[in-house]
Structures are given as C-alpha cells and as structure tokens.
Image (tube, rainbow, N blue to C red; front, side, top):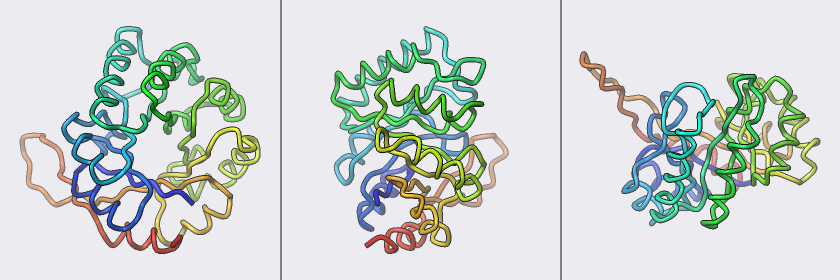
Length: 230
C-alpha cells in the first residue's frame, strides 16, 4: 500500500519521511482544498521525501479559461525545476465533466518534464463517475485521488470499490479525505493503490485581520496510519 501524506510545510514533509510514508502531496492553502506551493518549499521538501505538488493557482471551482491554463503550464516548468516528482491537478467543464482539452495540455507538459500526474478530487464533482474515469484513463493520468464523491472516503467506499473494479489496473485509484487509523484498513481492503491523508491539525489563533489559520503537523496521526502497513 502506497501512503501519501498531504502537507503544507517542511516540518510535515520531514515527519512523513520519518514515519516512512512513500511521498507527500505538497500544497499551500490546505483549508481551501490546496493551492500551488512555493518553489522554495518544494525544493526543500524534495530533499527529504518524494514530492507531488499541487497545481492550482486559485481557490474556487475547477473551470479554467485559457489564460489560467497558460499560468498552470508555466508553473509546471517551475515545479519540475524545483524538484517535484509529480503534479496534482484537475480541470472540469462548467457542466462538471472532464475538460479533455485542458487536461491534455497539462499532461503533455508534465510528461515533457518527466512528471507523474494525479487527477485530484475535482473528480468528486463529476456527475458520471464511470464515464469520467474512462476519460482520465484515455488522457494518460497516472492516478486518481477520490473520496468516492462523498465528503469522507469511508462514506464513499462503495464507489471507490467500483472505481477499482472499473479501472482494472489501467490507472491507480487513491482514496483520500478523512482517512485515519480507524478506517484505513477498511479502505485498503478495496484494493486501492494508495491512501491519502493529511498530517496536520489547525492551531488556535487569534487573528482579527483575516490572515488565516496556522496548521501544525501531527506526528501521532502519521505514525498511527503508517504503522498499520509496515
């Protein structure tokens, strides 16, 4: 079982490496679903563990006009040069379908840099999951991150199981959202390729200026999950 830890700091990356996770999904803005992290943070984290960087230049929906796709294409070059081994992204149409053209452009650029590609939980907004899965396979994504179209993966476990069956080894299925030590084994029994979980908790802050909440990496959470598979 491949274990991927979602982190937003060098401390989180170090803890993931310490507890023998396989890689990290590195983001900024975890509270809004993850945004593209800084180049310096990627470079530092890649010294201690394999980094797959979020490619998402803004919060909100996953419908990107050409000008934003151009930004993302430029970002791929920077992410690769900083030391990322993969990128995580997802483009939808305004009908909640896979945007084949936009995703194809980003995959082509990523493959030109030798990067793996993960389609993130934008998939969980798609109205026709089997059809969407087939499009991702045709596009050449390495893996799909999904919660089974529920807020928590354990509640979407039936669809996750179906996705594993439908994929039939043609794309990796990675379950994520709400994964913890009490449900990780049950999710693993679906024969997903990987589990994805966050490493942090939100610190108490007194902020009247709207600067956001600080997160703190939780070594106990990482250790409690990784030890299940060692």
